[in-house]
Image (tube, rainbow, N blue to C red; front, side, top):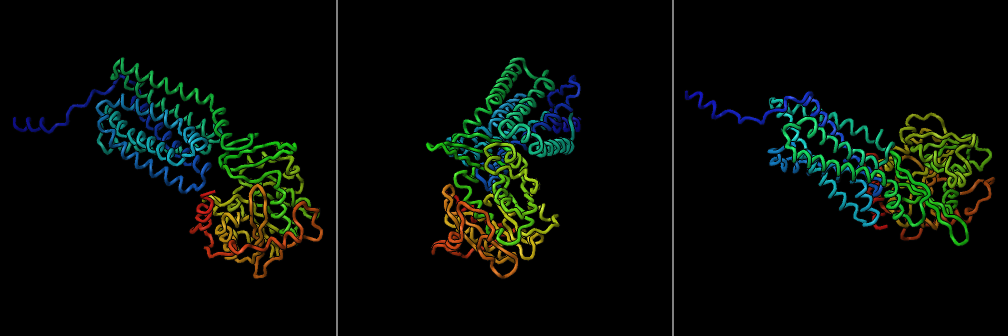
Length: 531
């Protein structure tokens, strides 16, 4: 008798009855776990990608989003403990709010950046809220899983996290491979928000409908309907909202914009009183050229490097085709290989009249070969030798770009550069970012090149610098070829003056940049912070 009383005293309190009449209830609940995990990871990736596009410094953006969300998930898990008393209702509410906040997160942050200039505070708040809601999911789902079929805790945890990790895998791969190219960032987040809301519907309507009161079920379904309606209406208006927000960030009318898996591309055009249009290309918000003065930049980038041998030329970057235009002005250039990461950029340069008109159709010239590939990876596999190499990458304001300004990259370049070939590197502004400029020069020198530094003035950019280099110890002369075409900006006198740097912008003590120590990224983020 005593033993029986002891057993009763130590027995586990009875659990609420499982919904045994719902066919496939456990499968449906694990499906909800899968969907929640996929959606949660997509929200995280969308926030990091948006920050990288708008702010740059992808390492910082990723670190802030992940650390804040992981911290918030822990807090959300603890906060969900009292909610386990009514897990069905609590889970449906959490999913509804998460669907709304997560689905609208990209739009919220884009608006904060465009109108309020409060991107970082807004990103932290959104990451915190999304993390809290994601963290609340697992305890509630675990409770619901045990209601369907009682299991040992370790077995239930194993099942739950196995499905959760598979969902995270699908979400992680689906974002860059499907959602981003198909819907874009804004619409992609809205679609995922809708999926999140559906996960809540699955639990309430299909799995635990017999354990949910009519009033509670009606309220939850009404709430989910409102969430889906808001997300759907925002999806319909997304293009107009995006154009309005994006236009607020640019002084001139936008004539083309698209977000690719690699970058945000915007082209603007304005017409002065003289009637001369000013077409400008922006990548991730950074100006790449103005049609009014781009010839100054591209003549300086290309022609000094082609003062020697130039039968076979390599261009890395320069997907707009403007550097290629200048190279093709030499009749003795027999072949040019242009390596550009983003196929959307080269497609735009070929088909979009404002760009195609500026580059004179250079990408379709029979002497030109366009390769869409990562330049670092492409160089590792390249075997052909080139007489001249022109490097026209954007400034190294992210980890993915900083590797293209590293000692290792210039070492790879040496494998394809002819022994007496010349390479020129766009190197940023010696005035606005002197440490960045001289770090690039020192990096090239560390890789075994002799260098000649020069700077020019481009009104739309301001002061801008380049590094001309050749393998060995003898610095290449800064000159034009005797048979150079007639140029609008450069001549020998301009080039002679271009090598003179003012006292306050001459060589400074900086570190070379490597893959393990991307010093150039540190310098560029510090120096451009206030501009």
